[in-house]
Image 1: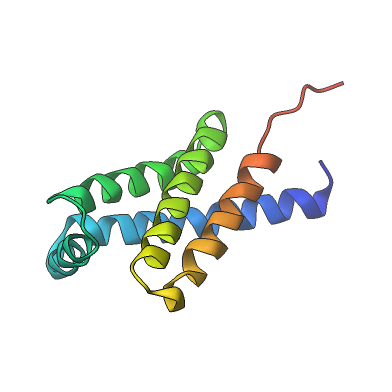
Image 2 (image 1 turned 180 degrees about the vertical axis):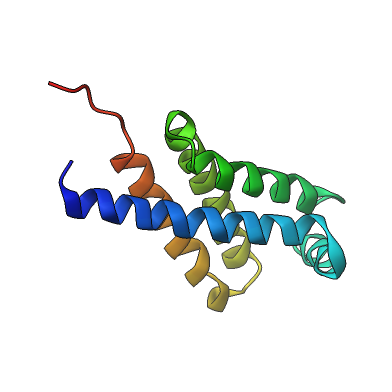
Length: 120
């Protein structure tokens, strides 16, 4: 893997890890947890789904930092972002699709570039 590609991979991993740990934590604790609960209810999800999503986001963010789990974490986060994208589109919130598109795209890059290649 070239130096620029490795740098881009680590930049994506770092940004995604920070974003998902922070946003996931906001879904689990504090006053923002209540707001997330209200949003998920408005979107038609059962109670406490915001907590499940928050846990998955935190675990995915941390998982990105561990090379052996990086691809699985990136795939899980990509799946969450596809779900977020669909949720916003179905609920008539096209202005909110930018974040899931960007974060999902970065997760896709991490997934595809994060494959360990055998050394020659």
